[in-house]
Image (cartoon, rainbow, N blue to C red; front, side):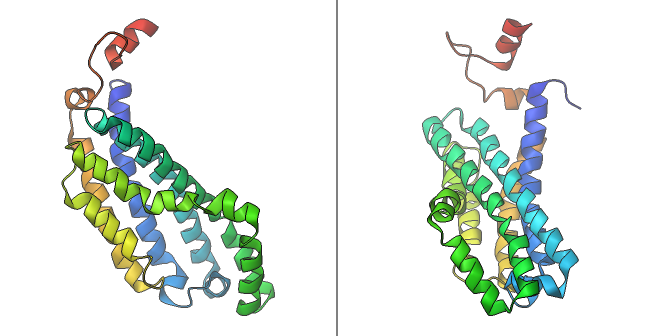
Length: 234
């Protein structure tokens, strides 16, 4: 299945682009707060098992999205290279910070078990508004994920690998979800990026080895390809 590192990277990149957004879309379906009270201090009490499952799925969805963002840089080696190398890592950092914020969930669940929903929200707000939390974990880092991915996909489109509708669909799906309350509408909005990113993942999986390797820099002086690198390390 894996002839060499190039095959592994191609297949891993394609799978990441399919699995990461799919995990997020499944998590919002499982979340008790999607269908009832969106306060986790309340929804945990409704179904603790589902609440813990969806939180873990969000955590891994965001970690895998960080890797997927970096995987997209490979198809941007021919055009908008500098753009990709700036936006890609920033997007990955955003998703890593989003994943870190998932540790708030068990705190909110515990507060909900020992306090009223209103008191729980007050305590959590005081904790999250600490400057170290705001500037160390939230601002502006999480916005690198929310807005960075559509911007990165614009670069993928400009590189010629994606159709114009892919960044548009991801931008609309994730962007409009910020404008409406978290709930059933979010399920629909987050399903749209699954289709858009999944189409890129499927295209990568269908590529042959030669097509994937063609995105590597040409064998010019001072630049390497997978084969030339292998020769120097053999």
